[in-house]
Length: 137
Length: 123
Image (cartoon, rainbow over all chains, first blue to last red; front, side, top):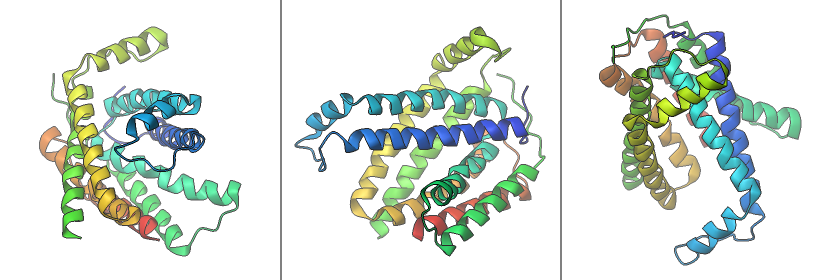
């Protein structure tokens, strides 16, 4: 089923994609934190790559990224790029919300204002019902 | 500062081109069903067989390298808030290269998302 406007199913796929992205970043960050190299330059780049490649967490993060790539392809297959792109900014909403809920971090007022603008923006985009005819391949 | 802006713009153009190429690729995919393991495998095979998608990956890789160059020259928060131009850029490219219809709702929405990201990244 193809649709050029946003449906709940496509919205949830995009959210899943954002969550996957965030999880992958966290996994790789956690993996790279444990390899004991803090400064990366041209002189130790090979050593850094080798150490990174020995971390299972880095590989796990990369696998999530690859799965996520195909998920994004499914999203693009089903909906206009001009809809998928802005809606794909939901990670900017979930990360601060998760930081408050689970990590009890303080999130500044300006940041909440930004979150509000993004929610409003996604709402507007989701209201767009303009049909895009698909060119036949 | 002007140097950073220019580098970010170049990075944005490559990345945006990647997004458009991905979409060009998926637009011409011939997929009958995404259901079940075999449907999924066929989808993955079709995606990997598509030149536009490989070109898109290459464009994104170049964009990422240029992006890292910008990070060498300026703070993460500045580079990231400049990076939110990406959203408007993709909107225009999607219109001109993919023929997607842009109405006021999409434009206002995308603009708000961009402003929101700027607020989050500078705070």
